[in-house]
Image (cartoon, rainbow, N blue to C red):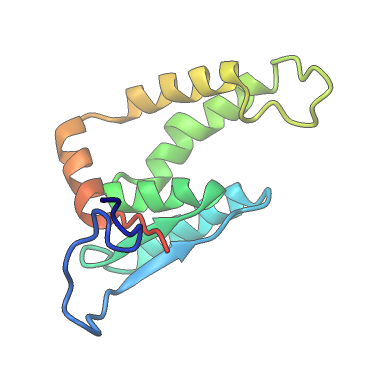
Length: 134
């Protein structure tokens, strides 16, 4: 018998349980703006008890905030070098080569350099990143 999608793999929660969190919607080209918002939140608020959620380009700030990695460090050590490197990639008619296969390889290379304690980061993400389905 097939499970109802609404019941599938969903933890049983008491009715009307309040979850404090921040959701980042699709960025529509505003990814860098969202990263600035994420840095502002991280620099000015205690996020240790929050859940984060993201859609499309909003996933990155959600993941980074939930990981508790320094947004400023990620920006300086990962995103700026990545942007500089992808500016050298051929666009093949695309406006931006941001999410091409080669671009993603470059981004992952810089992310791996930025992540020092993978186990702790994954633990933080698993406890603070909320993935929801209707």
